Image 1: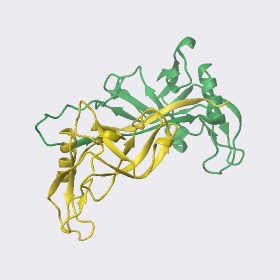
Image 2: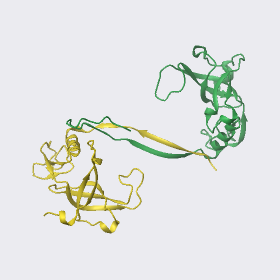
Image 3: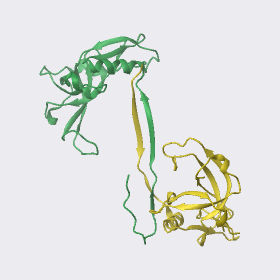
Image 4: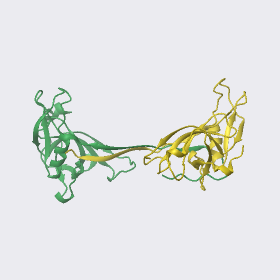
Length: 168
Length: 151
């Protein structure tokens, strides 16, 4: 961090007062399994034994407060429920503007994940759009959702609103 | 074994220091300590904007010495990464010559360790060559050599 050096004859009016916190975050058991599967090109979910909903990534059920069971394989195809078009540049941005960021309910899941939608003009993004994961090559995958480069349209007809209205 | 990853949360604040602390920091840049004189004649270092007893606005700043007495201290045997010194040192309250209050800084005892520290010991500021108007312009305080003591 550098600060333009104040001139030697000017009074000091400001000072750097940075706050820096360094953590080591743990993914925990469920997300460690989830991210391990991501490297292998698979998506895992967990089913709540109480409400039967499938969460991706797996986690304790936020509604029932109980542990989920099993690593449930989830499709890497899904439907765009809602989306936003990003048109404004910001620091650290890596995508070319405008781009689309969407809630995507994967087939077999009850809650959406959030990811880029590519391979489509931003103005053509829409609710109900059928998409699939565009995986990076296995050698380039890491334990992060960036192992999926983006979701791209499958070319299937749009999903009917009634089929995903419960997942908005 | 769960996956782990480093995560850094950082805010690079740059804050305004106000007129009084601004003068104090300007003094440090110019290699001197400034204190604030209260209506009762006490000299407070570092300087506050208001009299802690009466609340009145203060403005009379006076220079104090860059050596003084350790009034209390705490030994750090294993410094952490962001500590001002990367060797064992003491946090200390130092009452500078001419001041009525003590300010927090660090003492580097040089060779040796905690046994070199004592309440009441005399210390002198070691100034950095390049100063920017920050409390770290004083690299540390060091035990004053016996021959340098003047009372």
